[in-house]
Amino acid sequence: MKTLAEEIGPSNRPVEEVARRARTTSAALAMLSTECKNAVLLDLARQIDAGAETVRAANERDLAAAREAGLADAKLRRLALTDAGLKQMSDGLRQVAALPDPVGQVTREYVSPAGLAVRRVRCPLGVILMIYEARPNVTVDAIALCFKAGNACILKGGREARRTNEALAALAGDALAAAGVSRDAVALLSTSDREEIRRMLGLRGWIDLAIPRGGRELIEFVHEHARIPTVQHFQGVCHIFVDESADLARALDVCATAKTSAPAACNAVETILVHERIAAAFVPRLAERLARDGVEVRGDAAVCRLAPSARPAAAGDFGREFLDLVVALAVVRDVDAAIEHIARFGSNHTEAILTESSDHQRRFVERVTSSCVLVNASTRFNDGYQLGLGAEIGISTSKIHAYGVMGLEELTTQRYVVRGDWQTR
Image 1: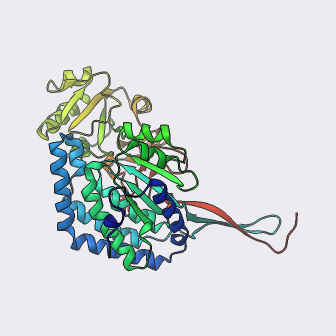
Image 2 (image 1 turned 180 degrees about the horizontal axis):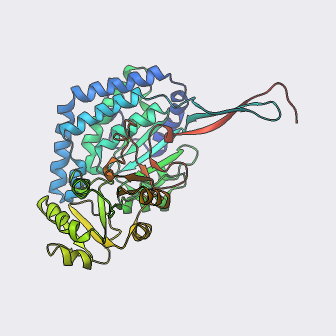
Image 3 (image 1 turned 90 degrees about the vertical axis):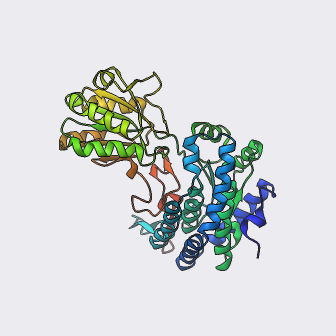
């Protein structure tokens, strides 16, 4: 039996054929039972656990090639798969299998004035094109969520992760085949030809949604060339505001770990704002902690006066996604000034306030309109796994269709099913 990688190979089928076969398969996927979908996901989780050494070996080859090519450290961190990362993949698959199936869920039900029984029902989107960079974990997340939501998916991963993605997709193909489901439910494209990707983005009627997940250049390329609907996973310029009433000892841990736990993650804090009334007490402690953790601080004038180790911030450092052990730090007048700063420099991704003031919590939550706003918690919790969704396909910074973490429900749409009693109009 051929694996998915052997069947598809590195783009040995025209993209139109890949999309056509995915479209054909999507109709059958929409009808699959929950039991069948869960069985595939659980089998894939078992295969990832059992085949961890094979996947890690493929990942090591990708990492070696990426280092030789001079890939930036931030991208190398995203590319690397640890044992913990592989376990999170299989755990995420099990969590998705345990979640309620969104397909067929009735979200609204009523009787119209004409006596019609009206239901609003969730149904699959159809075919989803996922374009992403050096993030092999996205391969499994996309497969799990698209499949559980009844969609076919076409995966265009970064060339840096080609071997890892092929190893993971091969396991998925085997799990599909074992359950009697067409391998065309998941298609892996390894092409790096921009012209082929442009053609894929123009296949209206065959692909229902494109989700780009990566840096600014990728997002702008998709936005420019797409002739199909898109949901953007744009850059994460995430902020934490430390208010005057914050518990400074606990705020110190939240701020530091929001950067150091995964500096290349999109939900890592990039800018920390400190209320001027506590700046003298907090900024030197925070700068010392960050320096000890290997984080470079780029501060405004007030920060540099309080923490001589800080480097003066350049004009573009506020509003920048560093994706590295670098953070921008500024002192602001009050909660309103923090909100204004976020409105100017934020990217609608994730913001947090650390405060004991219920009034400031309310004002921050009401006025900051990012896809996720947290109170007294790290920005790193804006994550499908951490929020109990099992996995995510991305964090949408678009306000149309989906906003924030995209889990199962966000990969469905809703339609009306109406039953009458021979009414006429």
